[in-house]
Image (cartoon, rainbow, N blue to C red; front, side, top):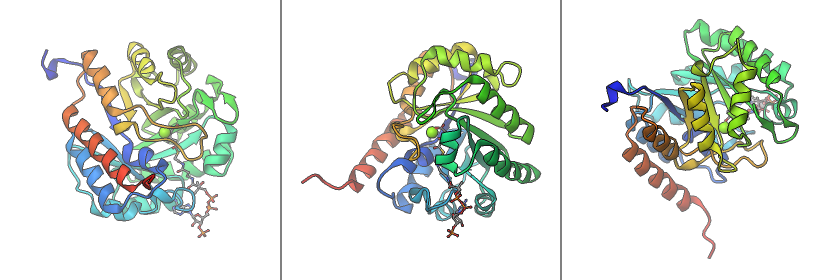
Length: 294
Ligand code: HMG
Ligand code: MG
């Protein structure tokens, strides 16, 4: 079967943001720029390049403006960035991002720990961001974190996710991204999540953002594909995690996701060999930054 006759699944690469925010070492700007450029050359429709968050909270990405100023832009790949508030939006607009991502938790404890506010306060804060971004016709991804389980509050009721999704859509988010922040999901949880979203968000309109803490992300992708999900995030070399979520190591590895999708007969438009080479390259870069044990 040739690529044009296969159904397309959208893969968003989040390694430069979700991956590098969780590394102990601060990756130098030049390496970040090369990482993003290599990923753009792989053919991803979107690379989440960095975050315009407070450098006091995430020092690993405190160089977002400099990174954005130096990356090569391609008409094929959108470069997006996380934005928590209007201060971040100002910086993201000045940097010329193609798309922003706001983030709201479905659990109160994670909302406080990650964004220093209740869910209601964060929705109010991001409301101003989304309104302004949409006025500038910028696409807005609305992440919902802890959609399955919170590291502090335990299991999340699908009704909480539904409420946040409804609010984000009403604000004008152009995409809803459902995060399993600590990789807690079983395949049955994915079906339960979408049952809870019935009438608000269909699987075909959602993006799924899986972490792979317990090795179940691949099984969750397979279940999600059966349900009709056609957009996934992944991180090359399985880098990633949230510094404010205990027990949240790597994201679903992009290489693994691509192999599942290819085996299932989907087209992604992404060059798998180039992704594997980039995974090797970033592993070497990170290894060189880690203190040697001798
Ligand atoms: P705050 O401390 O309440 O903010 O943090 P504030 O407004 O009181 O400001 C405090 C200081 O931060 C001030 O500086 C501000 O200028 C500065 P000072 O006057 O003290 O020198 N500041 C900023 N600087 C640069 N850019 C900004 C910015 N905002 C304030 N945008 C805040 C509130 C939301 C800013 C903070 O909690 C924050 O930055 N949190 C981000 C945490 C984060 O990035 N977590 C990881 C990403 S989320 C994730 O990984 C989950 C996801 O992958 C999905 C999933 O897996 O489920 C997306
Ligand atoms: Mg994440």
